Length: 108
Image (cartoon, rainbow, N blue to C red; front, side):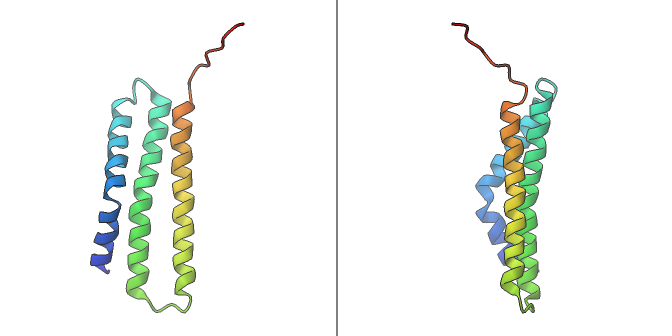
């Protein structure tokens, strides 16, 4: 596997990796107090963290193999799958923000 490309891709994602890891730790810390939001946050950060590594490994693998006539198509598919997974992770985070909140209705 092209390790220099893989290391470079993971290094570029470093700040986001830190945010996802902190999110995972906080989700575990608050899982008893806010169970549903914490579980959704934990799932989202696992998906998002896995997405970074999955896309990086897939790209490095396909660059290494590199004997495809439709190389651009394969990289496009990897990118599309990565985008869908980021959307799923982001949707779970948004759901975690709003789930279980009670509305404060103001009576006029």
